[in-house]
Length: 209
Image 1: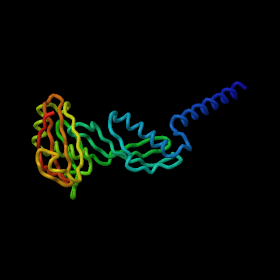
Image 2: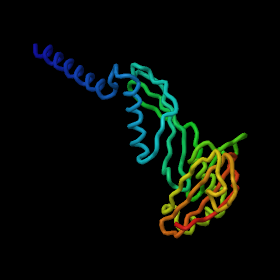
Image 3: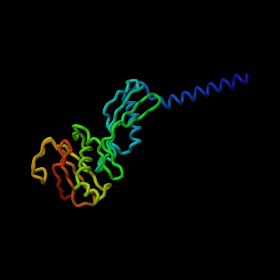
Image 4: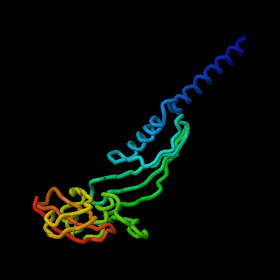
């Protein structure tokens, strides 16, 4: 009887452990793809604190059993060279696997790499890419950031389908351009760069704060 009792207790213990494992690794059922998506986004936000994460596409099943989630991840979004990468997450009921598909911008040891610049038919389709291209290609911007400090410089880009001549000191009208602003906290002025859609610099100027 003692042996049977011990076996019975062991079976109960194993069942309890198995139940705990299922609770830990199986997401809630029947709450739609948003539940699975939120679990993935929570994981991404822990991996890249402070990053801007956007969902590009999702094939997550309504039962939350499996699927793919494609994300845009922007790290240090207001820096002179924000890192922009596309990742996809393979979501299963018991595990999550992430893969970096493409790195559009990468800042490493003072070098702002923009691999997409060499792509055939390249066009600037993102404000983050516009910022990185301006920093990558403008000697004026690079000098400004070097003098006042990379970590002390904020950058922002805005797209203009039509830019009036009186909008900038260049006194020239432009079509389909990006205006990129670099502002360092210790500086008394800001540096501006105008890019066309192919990433060519067509103007530089400065403005006092």
